[in-house]
Image (tube, rainbow, N blue to C red; front, top):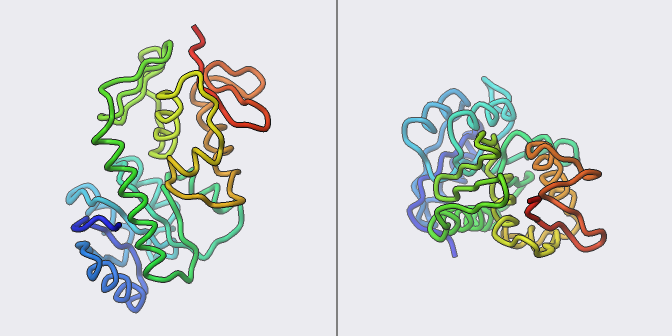
Length: 232
């Protein structure tokens, strides 16, 4: 299922690719706003509040990864990065910058539509079904506002970090496998990409003031998964 009538900001400077993607997305029921420069994209993100951004990295004015970081300072809009970069280090850098998902070039219209559907489904379902607040010790998560606080201080989380933290906090005391996180948080079952989960757990630990060797909230169960516990 592809959600109809989402406003999608398409940031792509190649006119032929932009035209083909615009046609495919429009045929699927989306409203597409194509632009060719990062500066234009940043302005639209703040003024028009799109439902999702597809961001090419090879932009003429600002490097796509830098543009993504700038975007994250003003919005938590879901972002799918379109990239020719395939190395693990590059993918980790994109996730660290705030990407929700990525597609590697070349890709088909059907492929990007499936990714869009998954990202939008997760973003909308999370908001619609979210409780007012989840409290685990000194950690307070407010899913509807997409805010998290530790000892009263706000945590600066990427969209994906927030989703992982919320999923685990809703299941305190349960061991959650990396495959379950990939299925339920990413809405995908990518075999061989478990390092994505490990990276996000590592980032969350750092922001929660803990380490794998000395965990407080996030405890690894070797060979099984990770479990959120109340340290109090």
